[in-house]
Length: 215
Image (cartoon, rainbow, N blue to C red):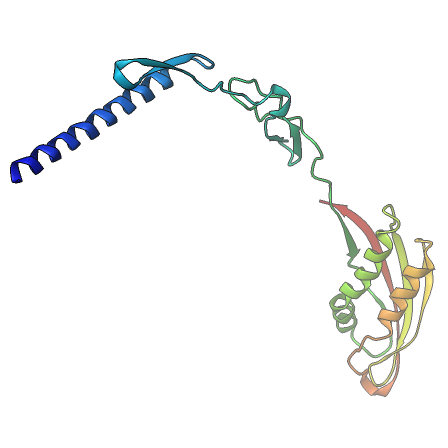
């Protein structure tokens, strides 16, 4: 019984080996064949059967595009040329699109205040310069609506005995925008200064000079 089992096992192994060899040979012939050609595969009893290989299909040239190019100035280019059927894609070169826009900053120039009263001019200047950002914000708001806006606004105000601001008003203006002038006055009204010496009041006149700075 044992010799019979050994013989059957050997025969089965030989059949499997023969089948794998035939499959490998057929696959190699199929890969080497051109699209739409036929290949033959061994059939039963040593005969050959014709097999029609599937035809390869390529993406049409009109459906293949290259990537977007980059403009040296920071802009995004357009799409590249259409690719050919052989490679399925085009080159990634594009024509530059929108460049980087110039940025405009709002600037408030430093100036010297005119001080009348018993309070050091340096102290008044320090407080004003420290509070320039809220005033610059007023300018930025108007500059967004009028990109060419520049000019000077002179504000006169009184520093009380307690160091608060009283009666701020615009005495001169070249900007021609009441919204900017009103915004500046409202900001100045909230400032706090050191108390004047001797308990008196101080009158201050200060010119705010606004200009655009392109980056």
